[in-house]
Amino acid sequence: MLAAPSPWVMRWAVELPVGASVLDVACGSGRHVRWLAARGCRVTGIDRDAAALAGLAGIASTIVADIESDPWPLPGAVFDAVVVTNYLHRPLWPHLLAAVVPGGRLIYETFAAGNETVGKPSNPAFLLAPGELLDAVRGQLRVVGYEDGFVASPRNAYVQRLCAVRERAGAVAPRYAI
Image 1 (cartoon, rainbow, N blue to C red):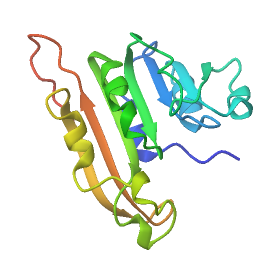
Image 2 (cartoon, one colour):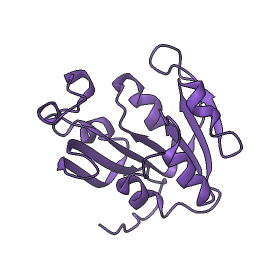
Image 3 (cartoon, rainbow, N blue to C red):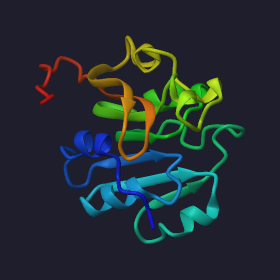
Image 4 (spheres, one colour):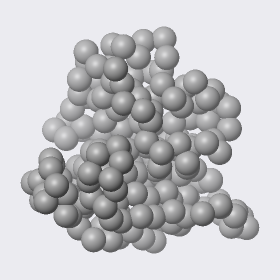
């Protein structure tokens, strides 16, 4: 059984219009792919696990790729939203940020420093330093939502969560409920 979609992803993706293009990075079996597709989004899921992606046939476009070892498989492709959860490979950040269209958003949620005290992952290479997501988007995207700390549900974990938008040239900044 698939885990429920992240409340953070649902909060920031609910405003995406029908037909919005979404990239779900390291999507695994597709808990977010399925939720987004059910809302009418055109979703592309990318993961290195071909067996996990096979279950998404007919639901979304999928790309089997080792995005940590091979070249980025979507050069120049852009999306209305890029979603990343429970995954961290810092060298991908330039590709992820470049994939957000003007007016689009990056929705990111993964483990942070402190998680080593409550479970896995505990390797510092897979844990964000305080404020690291903010630093990753600074000067490129406007942060509209950010959290950094301990969450008890669905499991005890330390996480950082961010939603950031790429401003449209000359656009008035939209209002986001927080």
